[in-house]
Image (cartoon, rainbow, N blue to C red; front, side):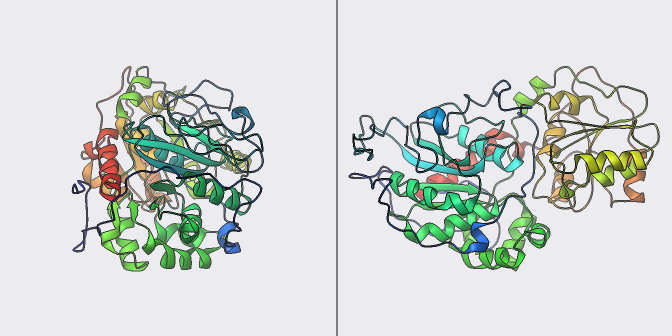
Length: 468
């Protein structure tokens, strides 16, 4: 079995050798949608949780009807694909025959050689950073060595699945209602591996695992720093208990940073042998192509850009309060705090300096034209927008709570990342930013290990170790 080339940390870095898997498709007929085996009831606290993941704005469109992102084809889910909604969606991959006249799925037909079937699970195609990362990793999987599928609770959202990947929508935005059809479709698919991100979805899949045939390998990716994100969770106690009990049972836990790796091992009891270091991938070539004509906020003085969901987590209120006189701040994002942030800007006398706009696919051009990207988050895992800003050659000014920002600062060129506490120190850091209008993107400041080819190779090595 080939050794994994992924980066490992800790003394116990060897992953236990899994049994060899020779295929990933179901053998025999599938259970009908009308008579599934009754699944074990999931704990209510886990089943009712919502996502509070981070955000990445590049590659997004402003509405579901806007042009497709370059990652792949338009969405094909739910009723638009002929799937029953609500209920168990009909698989549409080439390996599945049509349903029988009685409405039951027909026996799986393997007319061509297929690779390992890998099912990726997301709550939606919303423009979050966690969703963006999983789609990039999915797009990089070589076919036909792997047969990727995407299962989404709710297909709404501006992101698109990569070309060649079938999307299976459950038409249920809440985990509590999506759990039963999710379990049913996983039983029908019998994947070789399941890949998930966002803590509450990871916990649900780990809890379902004993009910799945064939013991698929379960790979969970952590999107936040547990010490900062878990206290903010809706069911903080249940989440922490679930992390301690269930995460150690995963075949692989993907950690964005050494900080997260250490917290899982030290505070949550996850063995180092189960974890792999996998930073967020950045498609630098695509970003810089879209940043070819930098856009700078109108007016004189420093021009700053920030991006993410308009929520307390992202700390945009901190940036508004610290904004120097004569500067301009452009915030790209959507979310519940839009009105509150506009009201704060007015109360601080900065209404003319601050503009909030929806997410846009043109963010790389705005990042390239800014003097600095602001990251005033209260908690993060690893900020996609900070990585994307560095790829566009624009420095970052961040707060210490912004996830693994200290690791990024140590790896990036000197001066690329400035870290300052919120308040007076952050305001001083903004005043120290040099005004630097440009007509073309500056040279990249992004360390090589965050580039998509390197991250994709590490991810594929993890899957190969588990499946081959």
